[in-house]
Image (cartoon, rainbow, N blue to C red; front, side, top):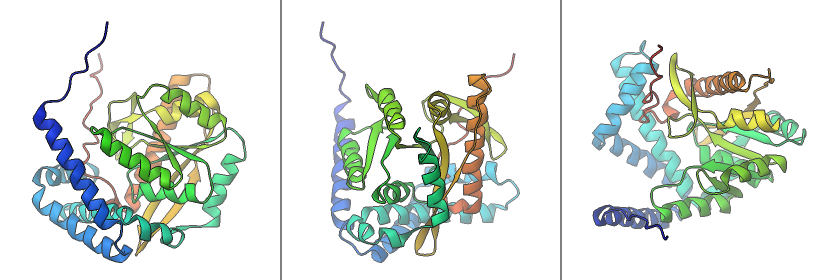
Length: 308
């Protein structure tokens, strides 16, 4: 018997189509801009968004109050404003694809010591589970590594609009990063195959999403954190590396470090321990430059079940 797929209401389909057209038009304009001008426009867009997007601004301020209770209201307000500005700049930098790709090696500084961390992990032949977060410019991080010749795949969530998903997939593929879309048929096998082939498998684990998660500390408070990175490493024996591409002046600094782990025989406890260590590394990166994280995300939305 054929299963009927329910289509979204007409109004929602129209909204998605208009959003797609808007994104396509914006990319068509921004993709040809000089990088400096694109960055300037992005900063202005971020400031504008902070002024008009009241709901997102309030979410950011609420998150900052939980993470930095010792800061004053004025300090947290300025951090939130700087976060919107940074995200606008990062988005427009990525959008200026032609100029960005021509200057990628100069734009993203990747020192020999940090490259050595990745190469040593890859040399073990079991692949690398590469963990990062929505810190700095994560799209440039993946692009810089892949265009340097390291085989890379990333796990990502599909957007609500398949046309936008295709745009994202095409952008990443142009930079040498292949996408594994979470939830699609065969995704789990593709992840294991990538590691078995000795490739880099990238995951972002700093958001509260509808995936299998464990509760580990984040800024002193338990937060639901995706466990896939830890589970993959424990199952395959892959090395685990964390890395971040954080803004420095008009460019970025890409740095990496390996997170050692050892199996105890208790797979569940090991997954929690490793996930906690990875979350701590992400928190440390955010603390170095708190204006470069997505504070409008509701990181502590899911709460642990009350103990009985």
